[in-house]
Length: 451
Image (cartoon, rainbow, N blue to C red):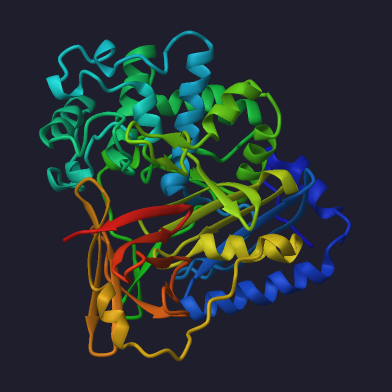
């Protein structure tokens, strides 16, 4: 295995060169699977890292980091983080909490005094857990190609009514994490990206990790792509503002992420109690437990504890899956918006720990007549619905504002998507009436059928 080493990463690269082939059979299976998946999904380039028992057992790039220039993807290739970046701002906030510079139960009005009345009960903890009620409708108020100041963003976010009262429910909120970056700036006087470099990236030797900046010269930077009618296109561009917000606007390589993963196994950044708090599922005031902590999803993978997160932004997809008790981590970075790195990571994990392998979903030949009972809208959170529709003999699911995707039956109550690692289980009462469904995507989320 040969690596082209950057000066700052020479030690790590040399270590990789001499790793014994302790899992050659698994490695061959991974190569075959990844290449098949890339061909099927038309993924230009992809890099993966597998860490087992604290050692890198595989770090490899596949395909092209830049299609126009014919540049191969390698372990040093730099990708965009998408929402995988949320775990970094969450960790930074917890570091500031440990230092007494912020408090989890501080109201955001402590840092932004002129907040609207509806924001008065919102705390830092609410923002970290996505229980603030701050709405993603913010993105309907802004132009992604326009620059805004932080004060502008706060005003735009404040326009939209809360989705629910703080702490009452759970809705994934990118806008809430945008607020976290702004609050860190208010609390410390420093841009959150500068603090990430100072407190996390530099100490850990994450040489290429940084805030996105398209103007700078960034060595080994991949290009991002998306598919339009099956044809590969370059990513669409956004303003510098939206490449620097705290909801997920980072550059890094798999080698950077390996260093991050290693640090999470120690108390180098945070005390163990703080890490465990980040990895504890949230319980809302309405009594529901949601599989999310602070910037991490908490998942049961066939009885094995899995802490993970995915990300998507500007023609890139990212995923980190950490099987805590198995001491296994899989990192997948891809330069295609249509890729499913979560499914890739989960499948790769199964080659090293067979017990965590995702169940294979197969379409079953079942009478589809009863499935009409499933058609309708299901409320997964206040104001957020999953729509199930039927066209002739085909069924489709649309989660919130995402595009509809065809779903396939594998039993009388279980459906799955073929293009992504998403499943649906429909729930009936004793009389056979459909009362809800369970969305299986990075955890299990219940939704009630709406009348």
